[in-house]
Image 1 (tube, one colour):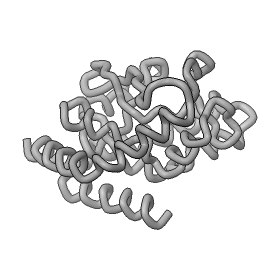
Image 2 (image 1 turned 135 degrees about the vertical axis):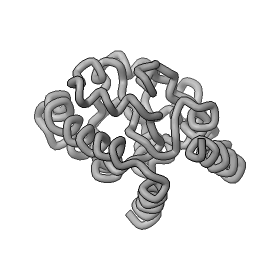
Image 3 (image 1 turned 60 degrees about the vertical axis):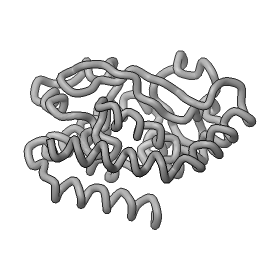
Image 4 (image 1 turned 90 degrees about the vertical axis):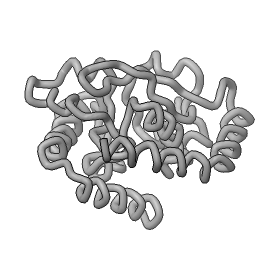
Length: 197
């Protein structure tokens, strides 16, 4: 209950403070490529329930049909503005709405698409016992994930066999050790990564 109350408070405050940023990004996305400003995608949340994750749109319309994996600068589906949004993680800001409505938490394992959740082992599925998060220790460790996949000759294989299992191991550790203090450390680590690099 305490964590949920903190999620509601932080997401409300952040949404109010960042409203001008939302307006600017919305205009940039709409003026530089065809389509709406937001991207919605089915992700798997707590207890295996699916929900619609929100992002600012960074790819051209119809790009998702060409595959889930994106590979940074060399992925032609990503728009010029989209690449900047991804580099700065500003494309993730609409997920504050997911946090506010209860689909997500500020801190928790990053939500995955159903296709990849289907590959989880029974042990790995334990990450679904908590709300997925806007940030996590795993997402900080793999903040340059797109660049890692971009260097791979087989991005999909690298993701499912190397990156995803490593992230899930960190997420499992979070599920077992979660505490308010750990969440604060992850939030501070995220702020430092985003502001300092």
